[in-house]
Length: 303
Image (cartoon, rainbow, N blue to C red; front, top):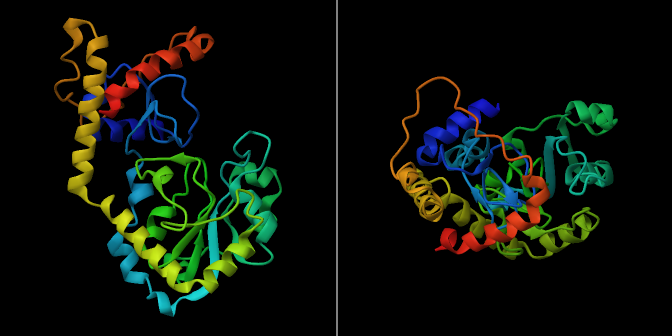
């Protein structure tokens, strides 16, 4: 899987293949002690530069796919639904259970929520009791309110939910990808729920009592999501990211190496992309100092 993502990254961001930055392209997001290139990051962490990888999984269900099976707002049931895999079982701090586990443990017997698939860890932790029949996209879009708990990094379903005539209910995003989940505003793009989902009945009651407001939230979300499915705009963003990273790194490079990032790098049609050099063994001991230095580079990335 990692090799596939590196190949995808190389095709989409050829000028960044040789960039002297750590590349984290898997489904995890941690606070970064130095600048990096990442699929996901912790919200408000300015150091990782976000890139679009695993595109098919996150953006494979597009506006046309949703429109084929969606229903008008007035035809949907004023109920909630969720199906998903038992990912990220340890939760945010390694001690608490994840959003998904807390959701099904608290509400699987009350609402139509449950796990559609179990990971190996899920089976070992006895979560088979929360398995429910998988639902198609059409089935889920019969509901006005669709729950969107985070998984290994973000809630993958959030993209197609926001493309639909339904409303996402979810805790405040803690991680973000190129979809910029951290920029979404409560009661503008989604209805907020507590991290442990204890207030879900109250939030559903608010939705049912404020039907017109929820319909407007759905329209706002659709406008937000549609921009991320524009191929021309996505290509422009990818080009801008490469240019800004190159500009920020250029002063730190040896003069003979400054042109490495200036021109596209030829990527073979087949074969794995070479992994970046392993970081220095001393780096973890100097994480705090490295982060302070990295922050000084930030204005160049944000210009």
